Length: 148
Image 1 (spheres, one colour):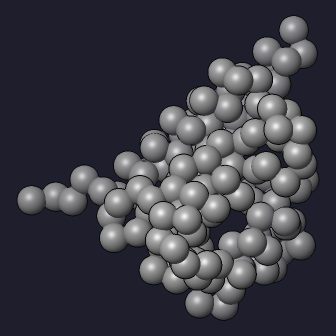
Image 2 (cartoon, helix red, strand yellow; image 1 turned 180 degrees about the horizontal axis):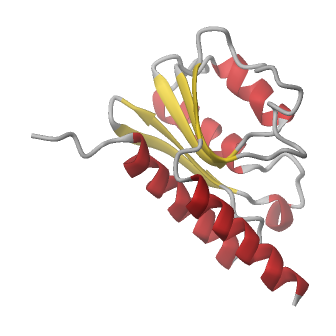
């Protein structure tokens, strides 16, 4: 029997979070944290609603997961995020010591890989480009709508 819980399956769940952000007028980025094949944290951008520049999807999902586990380290967890994390979020990901990070669309302007070097914890596995097309389309549609 094939395991349905693939990186693509979980990224689709992160995309659902990004769609919530889109509907709320926020930049459509979504994130989820998975531990032992279970979603233990979800988040989407809330920077406009909360008037807080740190209220990124990743930060929301990390906080929810840490609260769910009652732990600050998320070493056995995977973070799925629709857009390459910024340097701030990558710092939080580093300190949480994620086992794996999976992102969809690249962010050449503000992404943490812009200098060509990962700043994640050395033990963190990185997977990029998962459902990148879908993630990119959602972002493009948001900015087109914003300009109209």
